[in-house]
Length: 83
Image (cartoon, rainbow, N blue to C red; front, side, top):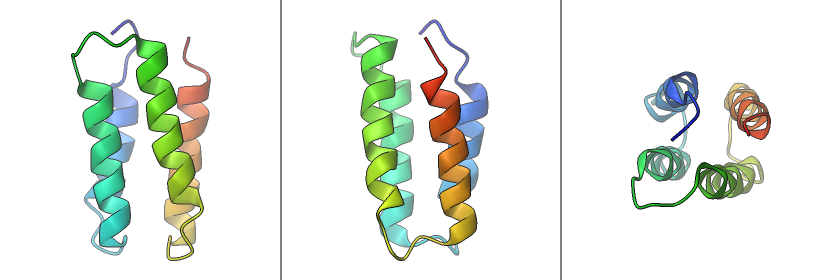
């Protein structure tokens, strides 16, 4: 992968490790992290698009704590700027 995903992975890991975040949200975050690390030959753009779709679904969750929603928006913003 051509981009540096380390800061994104760290942000997602913080959300995934937060016990105040609902379990279903943490599972989706873990899925998004797996998608980013997947080495199955998909282009970076496809992986980013898939992760953005996962994170967009999470923003619709009414049980999502407001601070977690902000963290997710920050990740989405960072991913949206990637080539």
